[in-house]
Amino acid sequence: MQNRGKISTKVGFGKGLKNAAYSNENLIVLGSDITTSVGVNIFVEKFPDRFYSLGIAEQNTVGVAAGMALSGLIPVFSTYAVFSSMRTLDQIRISLCYNNLNVIIGGAHAGISVGPDGATHQALEDIAALRALPNITIISACDATQTEIATMKAISEINGPVYIRFGREPIPDFTSKNQKFEIGKAQIILNGGDVAIIATGSLVWESITAANYLEKKGIKARVLNIHTIKPLDIESIIKAANECGALVTAEEHQITGGLGSAVAEVVVKNNPIPIEMVGMPDCFGESGEANELMEKYKMNSNAIVDAVIKVIERKKL
Amino acid sequence: MIGKLEAIAKKIRIETLKSLTAAKSGHTGGSLGLADVFTVLYFHQMRHNPSMPDWENRDRLILSIGHVAPVLYSSLALSGYFPIDELQSLRKLNSRLQGHPGRNHGLPGLELSAGSLGQGLSVAVGMALAAKHKNQQHNIYCITGDGELQEGSIWEAAMSAGHFHLDNLITLIDRNGVQIDGSTEDVMALEPLDKKWEAFGWDVFHCDGNNIADLIKTYNKAIKKKGKPKVIIAKTIMGKGVSEIEGNYKWHGKAPNKKELEVFLKYLS
Ligand SMILES: [Mg+2]
Image (cartoon, rainbow over the protein chains, first blue to last red):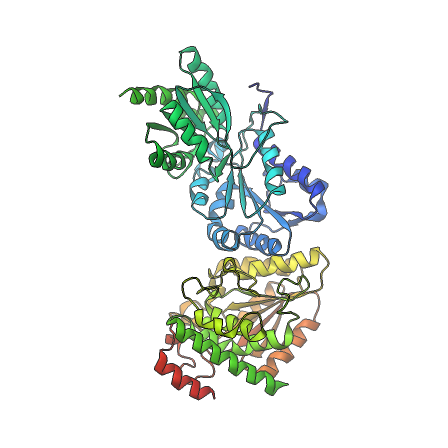
């Protein structure tokens, strides 16, 4: 895995939209005032006739998206993840999920790494809130390249509402431009057998960094990239549990209700092995630089290494 | 013509009451109060074809107040979308007639799953905007409650419809003046309602929502006006047609039992 340099995943989302728009004339973007900062400006510049500005009115925007989807269009509603997933939760539940409509919801500036803006703007509960809803697909890709590919795939294969989560902070771009990407199928990045690190989003690169460090200490880790939180790749998780006997989950999100919970739900029903969870420990964030916050709230490679050592101790018991 | 439509409205009321009694629960007052509006929409105003429920150029009815589903179902059945007998399955297990409309159960003619107040108008705006985007000529009819207008998202939707000059959108407010806790003006005052909608960029019309001739006249006037979205503030009487229920908000969320049904059907015939 080679880091080609740091790029924000929101750039991948914008490029994915623009690419998909050439072959899909039904793709429409709805704006919530912050088009540039959520990455959709790349689309708007190219296709101004397929953009409608709805203002700072997220609840209405979801309903408008539902009406457009019922009319055969594929609307994209993208704003900061705190608003796009939670201010609109009832609209997403009834107007989008219950009607099972083809709408792309962009969750921008997700995670604590949005930094200095502070807790109000750090979406750390979006996966938990949306994961309980029937019919929705939740995507949280690990870098800009994968976010671009995932966005195009989500649009070309759309069958119900899709939430795509992405961040603002530039992170290592490392996945292949020609990668095989299947929604709902985990990507196995490293195939060790001592422990499995099951990660999503920005923490996938951190997991690879942790695995490289651990290898020098004689611990061979498997790294699973869960780019699709829902539907979850249950098969790969059970296989990892059976073959490694210990798991660490890693996400830039609350542990409560997030990837860690989702993995635990699978593991306890099939092979209840020890799990340690790296993620936000049931508290609000605060202002600070991204790397400072990831260190303080223990969501980086150091935290993953610590969790691996702990879970391997538990495995021996 | 008016006489024929009045006869249909009576049939809709009868089928609505019968289905509510069979269901043993549901919203009687609002459903009866809207029977005349539904008659005018499904049997006069809207271009639709029950044998082609997915016809792309059909006019759409978006019912924002999902709780009056019984009057929608009766209107669809009497239009020919599905057998009238099926109305007896309202609110029962494995039924296509959910307590609040649910499209996933496959009922033909149903445009939207709805039941959480304040969402339907936004969906109607999206449909109207989509029709403009695709250069289509059909109209979007929306029905909201009056208590429902207390939801903030309604005004987000109203603002956006005005902004986009959606003159293919005609919303009717079921202005029966009541909601579950009592009079709308006591619970959370809505007046002056016409000035509010005007300020949001809408053409406002008033009519008697229980008078077929007045409804037809008002829809005609509204359709002809171009350039702005249209709202009809329709004064209705909750429970209209059954004097025991009329204006009595205790009948908002209650269904008649078998004895009451017998009495009510006598009133209607
Ligand atoms: Mg009312």
